[in-house]
Length: 269
Picture 1 (cartoon, rainbow, N blue to C red):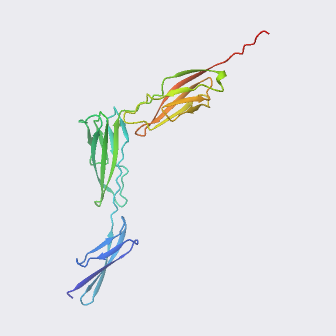
Picture 2: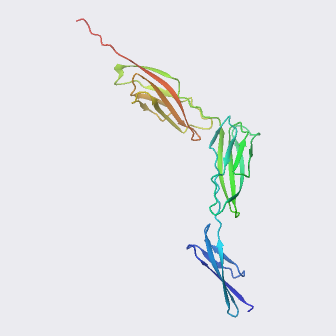
Picture 3: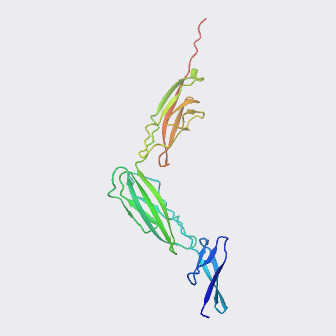
């Protein structure tokens, strides 16, 4: 006959899949709720004005979007001027990553970077060089899969001068055995430690060589003290810091302790 109607339903792959016919547009329906990498089989029933029907089926597939992962070192320390960012961890679970595209901006700290450049914009690895002053490079990676799906990810690299850790000058401490019950404190000073890009996040003083038993006061600050537990011995004291980029660095100071023995004087009578 001349008149036709069309009805759509689906083999549901989960409770959220809905197939709705659009009566204003012949032969068109909207499938919603289908998750990435899932297939719904849609049954199409066509009925003419004489009541005759025909049933057909078609599969509806939803492309899973790729996952972009931009990876780069958190910090690059001058005078090193070459570094890379990569997309090696980017994936597409139902196909493949077909293309990469990198963009970037440079936020200069000290001066504009006229010599900065990057190569490999359309590859999995972008290589950059030319920064000679402190700066932050912010990358945006966009990946496209074989079905045209896209995803983006960001990563930042801070270019800075390296943190300098200084545990202070080597020390010689002289104590008396008569002070055993009240030892004088031996002071440690790491305030010459410098992070050019911000404050030190963590401080930690510890003994790495010597007789056990040292007791530290304020051992999580720049200026600590050994308040007890030492004896006549050579020690190596280590200052460990975590800088603004969460880089862990350390410096040693040598400590020699000499103990005076107090002689008891006995009279003749």
